[in-house]
Structures are given as C-alpha cells and as structure tokens.
Image: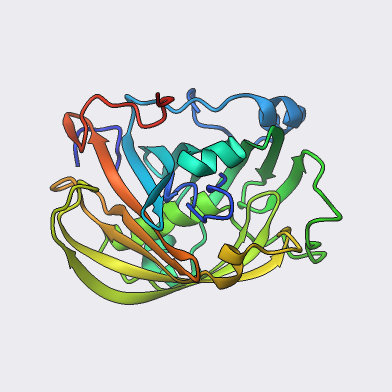
Length: 318
C-alpha cells in the first residue's frame, strides 16, 4: 500500500455527474483518522451540518475543472491522506458560470476507512471497510446533509440525514443498503487496484446516504493524451467505462441530461512521475452535449504541478 504521508511517491455537481471524489472527480476533514466505535454518529446532525475541512498541505491533493458543451460549469478538489491501510478523503465542489447562477450549488464530502490487501488481489469484489461517510451541500438555498456510520466489518450500521423530498425521489428498496460501500471508498479501492497494475473491472453496490445504485466498471484499454491548455495531464491513461443502475433516492422527474447520459468514462493515469494512479479526465456524452472534467492540479509533498500555480480553484470569481 502506498503511504501519501511519507514522501513523494458531492456529492457530485448535481445533474452534471461530476462525481465527488473523482471530480472533486469528483470532491474530501482534518484531525485524526476516525475509529469505528460509532462516536461520530452520536450527534449526526451536528456532524452533517459542520463544514468539512480540506487539508491543503496534507497527502495527495487533486484539483479539477468541469465543462459542459464547452462552458465552465464546476470546480472541485480532493485530498487523500493514507496512513498504512487507513485512508481519509476530503472533497469539495462548486458550480460555476450559468450553473452557479441557476443553482448556487456547493458541496462537500468526507470518507474515512481502511483497505485490505484483498482489494488489490480481487478487484472484481472490492471490499474496502469504510468507518464513516458524510456529505453536505446546498442547492438553490436548500441545505442537505447525510451521515453514514459503519461497523468493524464495514457494514452500514446507521444512516441519518436531512429529510428527503419523498414526493420527488424514488424510494430505496428495503434491505438494499446493508452490503454497500460509499462512492469515495469505492474510488479509493479501485485506484489502488489500478496503481498496482490491475484492470478496471468491478461490480459495485453503492450508497451515499441518499441514493442507492449499482455501478459496473469495464476496462476499455489505454489512451494517450497530448498536451493542451485545459489540463496538466500528458501521457497514457487507462479508460474505465461506467454503467449505472439506479435503485432508489433519485428524482422521479429526470432531467434531459440525466435521461440521455451515456458513454461515461473515467481515465486514470499518473500526472506525477513516480506518483500514484489517479483520475485525470472524465467524459460523459449526453443529448445536450459532452461533459468533460479536466485535472488542473496535482500536489504531493514537494511535487506540485498546476495549470495556474497559486490559484485557489474554489475561490469566488469576479
């Protein structure tokens, strides 16, 4: 296992699918790693509404910009801290441009847990053991939050959150949330597999506290990217095709974007020489245009690569 603490080596943007974690592609709290004693769940509402701190000088920091039909629609960043088998991911994302004007959306997420060697050996049955997952966000002035607690085996022991819009959301089938993992833990585990030279092939049962869905990952081989003005990545990346089966917690009235989204692909490569494999690009085709997420910054110890060094990707724009 790689330790990002030792030397080099929102939810998503709503309806545009910038996966938090992978977008943060998709974005990730300071302090010690959480234990699994359920202490965090004793005051779930306070935890759910408390801002999530993204430690910019710790671990591996990734920064992304999202575009839809050529228009800038989102910014995100995520920080991954590894200590042995344990991981902590903190992420934040926000809308930009016309999407910001329309929604004023911002979101944050955090996951803490641990990985086993089995996750690398058997990618088709990823079994990371999350300890806690929480997300919070605001859409059109409406705040939402959720907190998931897990037992020692990584099974959901408690799910709490702000009241859902039951008249607007599809119900989550009873008994389908227990043998699930949160989306960020799935991303961390899959990145570990690819970092060890494995293929992007897995079936995932995911639950983020509000939505329950299954994801099928298919390896589409490698693609070489040439330099351009939108990303820091230049090189070869592995393509992971994503198919989503919605089970519950999604809006009954699906948007034109959501209804026609297809050919979802995440590309995983190594932007930092000798560093870990991470998401470097996301592409989603829809009837209204293509959504693309570009990696614009990668920071690991003294290795710092960015399109605009010193720029805060999450800052307000004039």
